[in-house]
Image (cartoon, rainbow, N blue to C red):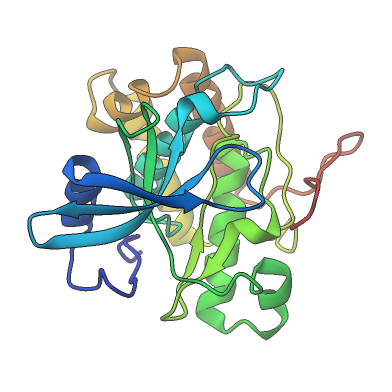
Amino acid sequence: MSDPAPSVEGSTHLGIDEIERLLQRGTLSLEGLVPWSSNYTFLATVSLDDQECSAVYKPTRGERPLWDFDAGSLCHREIAAYKLSRALGWPSIPPVVLRDGPHGPGSAQLYIDADPDEHYLTLRDAADNNQVIAFALIALFDSFCNNADRKSGHVLKGSDGTILAIDHGLTFHVEHKLRTVIWDFGGQAIPAAILANMAAVLVDLTSSPDTALRHDLGAHLSVTEIVALERRLKHLVETGRFPSPASGWRNHPYPLV
């Protein structure tokens, strides 16, 4: 699979490691609140030496309290999802780091220049083959990350046509929480190359507590959440099929977009 680093206007000359370094170490200056967000979300500029990029900053103390997710954990789940996507090589998730900022610690993610009127439900019918594959990978990723909130607006098309996934704060719960708008692939066979990616990551997670991936995820998730991730991955590898909507469960997020 290709490198999940997105191609973004203003940052195309930077590699993924450089973007992470810029997000982590750069001076973060707020530009304003992002409208229509359920949590406090800020558009920011990050500058370091002669490098600069736009970022989305989500401070922990701006998270709306939820009954089923621990307070202050959403930004950690964002980072864990990104780390897992790097290990797999898919889906494309903009680089995101945990750092301090003007309103305290939180996540800082590379801003994607995308048309806000374009999202999964508007893109899927005219999608080319690469974009359809990208949608399928997001659907699969959400199933083992247990994404409780894959809205259509959380799927973006970058300026170069790349499909990217954002907003992974409601993931990795130990109980079944999957709610998504992407059910188009339910019941279909998972391609062999993708199954091989998943199987390799499963080995990386279960072979030793000292692997780099286990260490990366352990910095942001509990042991029980990682065990639940392993269980979901193992089930998908064994069945070899995309999951279908569960009976007796609200399978779609609200609102859809």
